[in-house]
Image: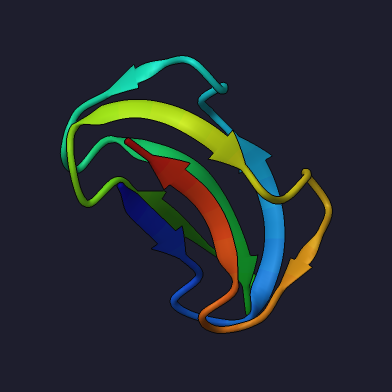
Length: 70
């Protein structure tokens, strides 16, 4: 199990995957917006996306859990 955590404070602009989807290492899962920049959140491992812990528009803090890949 790999917990995907926010690397910085930002707004969750867009989720580009869904629960149950197979993802590969380095796939973009969602996009954060911070200081008018779009920052992709990538999967650190291959597997199935089993949880998305945030919704589009949420503000995330550094190290917040945002997804789980198993």
